[in-house]
Length: 309
Image 1: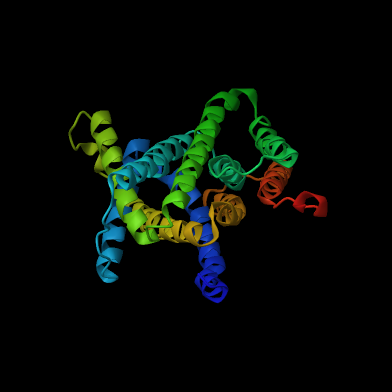
Image 2 (image 1 turned 45 degrees about the vertical axis):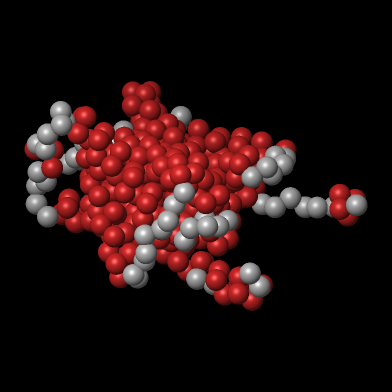
């Protein structure tokens, strides 16, 4: 693609990604609130079901033809669905049920760090000493906040923090797979296959958890929880991930992941505003360390003149 066309194609990315990070930041306390009404498997299934309906509406509106896929592409998309949708959503919802929204937002700040490291491994990039320093700094920031708890609260919340971290790793793994496939498939085709496949897995998981029957688990008290499910499914999941996958295909997974720095900033702010969760100096220190580690991992190394020869 000529440089001018590539530049025009990427012009939409910054504003769209910033809007997505704002929505993802709001989504963290919203999912935390939903855990007060629904079990984690139900939250994951409903959110992804709404997302699938949204992708279907987008495909009809844009008159998107169904992609012709090879067997290898089906296998790749199935792997993306497992990591980006099924495993990511199960771990995220289970983690948010056990930890605070502010902690969840902080741990999600490790996404650029994890994505940069996975991209280096997946695409054969060299790992430098700065990557090891970034890991130590980033995860040290998480440890500062996680370990600064009363002993009685550490165990359950600690498991929740680990589950949220697992969801970050799972999503980043799927992102690396998406980058490999985005050269031949557009973002809507990717999302339109990945999310229905992931929703099927989540539905099977939900049916196994509930004995194969639809029961009182879906009876919500009033319209507000349903509004949260719809907002989360349409804006945070469907539109957010459509934009995210499109950005990966346009500017790459490592550069796209840098925008995730804003998720914990928005997420921790909305956790305090909407849920009244207290924030203190330990959160500020942990956030600075995590963002510093993520920035260090994503930075391109300086190439010396002697290295070019």
